[in-house]
Amino acid sequence: MELSPELRDYLIACVRSARPSTSREDALRLLGEVDVEDLWDVPPDPVDWEEIEAEARRQGCTVADILYDRAGRERD
Image (cartoon, rainbow, N blue to C red; front, side, top):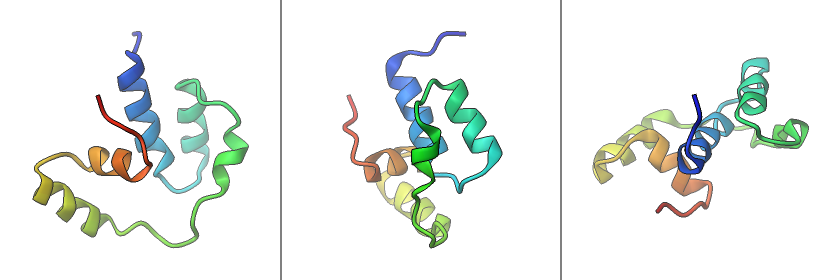
């Protein structure tokens, strides 16, 4: 299955928001993300998923949309 560039970017944003793990590394490699080692510099604080989910409900979008926005990427 081939992903559109937009879908690939969206999935990468979702995976990057996950806490560091082997599965995260594997997913980023499969998605073609480069230099996985550089992505370990994530904040040590846990993600407040309840707050993110509440924001998604307020905006009428998905959690992935919120994460994508917070990563500073522009949507189409």
